[in-house]
Amino acid sequence: MSKNPLERIPDTQNKVEQVPTENTREIIPADPDANNWNFRHAPCFRETMMYSIATASVFGLTEASRKSGAIKVGNTFMATFSVVALGTWGLCRYQKRQRHKAVVEGMREEVEKRRTGRYLPVPVNGPAKPSIPAEPSE
Image (cartoon, rainbow, N blue to C red; front, side):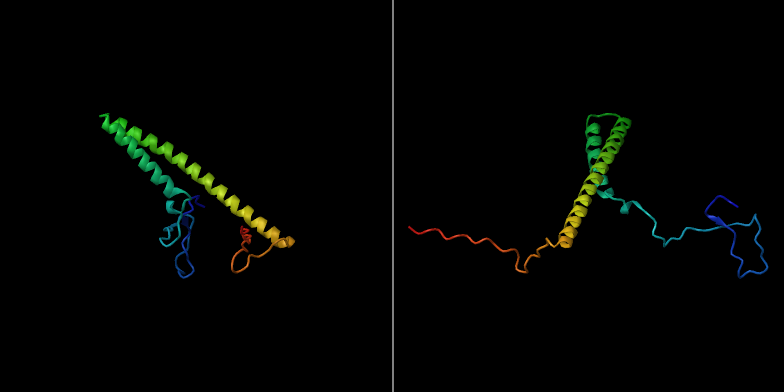
């Protein structure tokens, strides 16, 4: 049996004459309609790319304006892009995780309030406003 997951023995249910052998293999093409993972669905990808490309471009153009060689400009661009991309992605993921924790904690508190009966629903017209006492007239 082949270790390649893209190969398999051909389907012989409708083909009586053809008998599969160990050497007969059929390549299974990838399904073009399959929902393959791509970078557009990666969390924080868009923000990371925007910040890192913009920052690396500024640093690269600054290095180019100093009349540095093309290799040094390219190295500056790539180094800045890499550092900013990793930093921005890490920071974005951390902030996303903190927001998720806050939402989960809020939901837990709400469930606990409703379970224990300490839940007071807000009236349709909004919360009651405190009455302001009238100023004494002199």
